[in-house]
Image 1 (cartoon, rainbow, N blue to C red):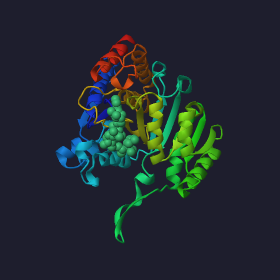
Image 2 (cartoon, protein in one colour; image 1 turned 180 degrees about the horizontal axis):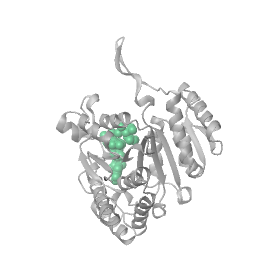
Image 3 (cartoon, rainbow, N blue to C red; image 1 turned 45 degrees about the horizontal axis):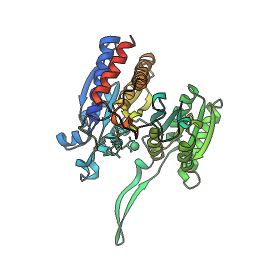
Image 4 (cartoon, rainbow, N blue to C red; image 1 turned 135 degrees about the vertical axis):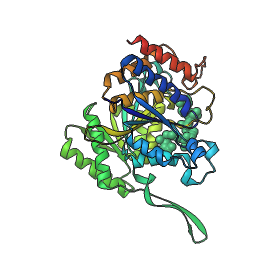
Length: 368
Ligand code: NAD
Ligand code: IPM
Ligand code: MN
């Protein structure tokens, strides 16, 4: 059988630096676990704009649609701040999400024991934390029409529209309930049904999907502002959090920091399963291109590496190998390996991006 096809879009800033460590790990699985991939590299974001004048070339879009999975680093950076909105690096990523129809964005936040002291919250609040945020990714205020900046009388008005259809809410709700079934069987859905009609519809549809098909899962509803507060106050009350595109963006950065660093949080963006049960899929760290540390070898590659572990699990039915990789990451953290973002106030000597890669490869070797 042909090897599965992986398209790697490293992107901008620290994207290529962290992805460099992921390609070493992909090679390791090919050499040591007989798990070879056909890997192709291409450009996205500012890097694609520099070469083609667009943040995502049509050929790249076609390759993404044909790949078994896409791995993405990060896009954006100050160099591109002045570009026209339509060609900004972030538009490339949003086009991928939309045209691949990746409506379900899984953002796990897990606290590794070795980092429990490092969180800005008290250790007992976050030790053992394991939550999964399911963020709707292809609709809502990110894509709703009308949108734009318009003249209105003698001033301008900026407009974006929050818009959800019942079927858009239903499919992402199903994805959250399916995940919850395999976890602790609890879903908390977050919106602002107190002030937004889209929130009222969201709540109604989620409740209906639950009552009809997932009665064994415990469902609760929470206003998203309270949800943000509860995430910081007592995050372990949650198992799966289901929320819309914009609230999910914000709540997942918040959840990332509970675990110690934004450099730790992976994500999977999944579409509907095909005939073989495989979803269209894109895997990427939650963090961005980190312009403040780009090019210095300081970036933590773990979020990107754990994103590849999610690819092994969700796209390639390699749950055991995903666990092998996650366990290797856990081990190097337990042994004290720390990139700069994982150093506390007391300081110490951080290791570089590639040294973190070396340590994880050594732990993988030791796992054989
Ligand atoms: P950011 O995530 O790039 O950085 C926020 C902070 O976290 C910075 O201090 C950065 O140094 C740190 N950080 C992030 N990832 C890290 C890692 N792996 N290791 C160590 N430290 C890390 O967010 P930002 O500064 O708001 O955005 C910068 C650019 O990235 C913007 O252009 C933004 O649009 C873009 N962005 C892209 C994505 C993506 O590609 N998915 C996500 C978020 C932001
Ligand atoms: C994320 C990012 C993106 C988003 C940007 C870069 C388009 O912040 O993936 O969390 O807002 O979805
Ligand atoms: Mn974000």
